Structures are given as C-alpha cells and as structure tokens.
Picture (tube, rainbow, N blue to C red):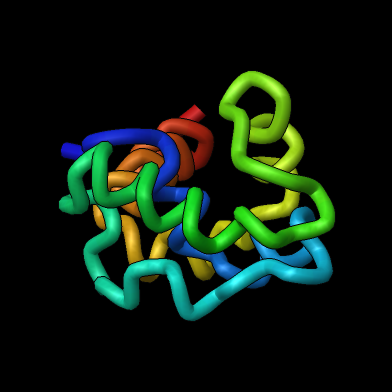
Length: 98
C-alpha cells in the first residue's frame, strides 16, 4: 500500500524538475524502485530537500500537487509504483470489459 500520494510524485523526477525549474535537486530524491514503500516522512524530507532551492519554492500539497500530477508520466510512475500500476490495470480491464 502506498504510504502517501507523494510517492507517485517522486516516481517521476522529470515532472518535478519541469514544475520546480531552476534549483531543483533531482539527486535528493530516493532512487528506490518501489517508491510506494517509502514512509511519509522519508518522502516529505526528500521532496523538501529537492525543492528548497528551486524557483517555485517549497512543496505544498494543496498548492502544488494537482499541477504536478498533471505532468506525471503514467509509464514512469507505473514502473516505480506497483499499486499505481495495479490501479491502472484494473481500470483498463473495466473499460475493456464495458
């Protein structure tokens, strides 16, 4: 089970870099292949470190998450987030079965 929605955000560093721009520190993000297993605290710390010097400033779930979610590559996230992949597969199966 995913610990936090931010797991899907860190699964796609390119989308975060696109949103945060200059000063974004990609190397501060976890390199884990299973980002959904990371604790909320680890995700929050990683995001904070990655964006603290960025043009867009610190991460704020209410103000930033929706826009970042729009920029995510589903393929990239699905490769690093098993539950996300499962959710997409179930939805795709339901649509195909309709």
